[in-house]
Image (cartoon, rainbow, N blue to C red):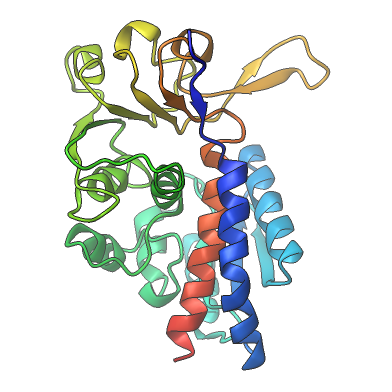
Length: 293
């Protein structure tokens, strides 16, 4: 048995940061420092960890970032007013509102309030529409990161059957568009599976590339893929164990089983996760270039 190629997001993200170095230096020569405003509402533990990782990366690259923390009881109006202020603040080229938001706040209304030119998450309807017609301004970070991984490891999608499991606006829908767009690193034939799909395994078993973004630990089993498939695991799930931390991180793929059969696979952690932050940095730098023209 030949071990699969491990698609390391850590390695690819390091390459991305190297490629951004010259762009950041060029902006600094013009006294421009790419800036990101992060808005965190409430005390969601996963969101706290993610925001800390983003802040650490931005600081390491000497980019400007500030986190605005609001209590979970904050009103929708308070959050919208903060976004209005950030839209007008020229220190920030990008605005990111960390999801999920408390139930009493309408996420769509909040996303729609961010200026499309500062929407570095790529969730605003204007940016989603531009992506759908193949003329993206900002691409959502996780799908963009997946495409960078495939490009870095020279995994061609042209003529390949790609199956995406999950249809969220954050990952599933945008990655299904990206993989099927006409282009050098895409041009795949893409199928989306979801909760209404009968016998998902029949679809994934026919796929050359399987992208799983469900948030269900160990969902994809060895019997659900064909020999030599490329497997992209987007899931990051906490599973209780007896370690000192009391949990371990696992993906949506049953690693022990799939490892024997896949030609290439992303690990969890260390696969798609680092790329999400790298693409946020890239989008923020691109937003600075776009706004300062």
